[in-house]
Figure 1 (cartoon, rainbow, N blue to C red):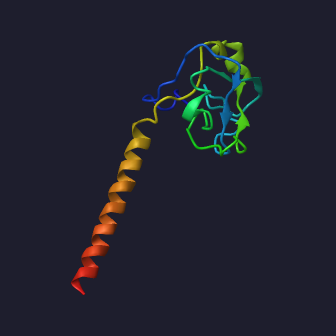
Figure 2: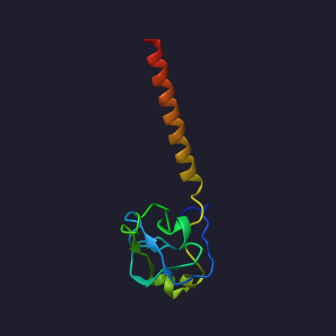
Figure 3: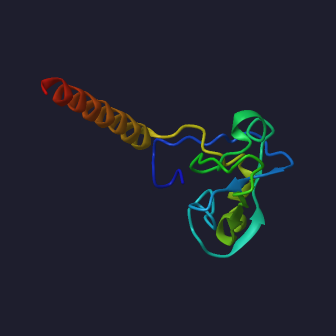
Length: 126
């Protein structure tokens, strides 16, 4: 994931016992290189990322996985990342959302506020 968007930051702490989960949108992706080929080794995430509000979110896009992670699928590293030992670098969870996603959220809120204000002014004119 961080290969394609330069502003995303990975956790990179020492991985623990918890298995990283992906949402249905990210299912099958390698968390390091985004490839869909030859899933080899299960992703382990650190203790901080497996507890609290992050425990039921996708490790790549932070989508909600449901109350008991019923929509979550275990994440796997691809064969190439395992061969290059990138799976040993640390916890692969994406910590920040990234500038493009933040901008998109801001623009949606701005558009919704403008639409609400336009509707109110048109109602007042009648």
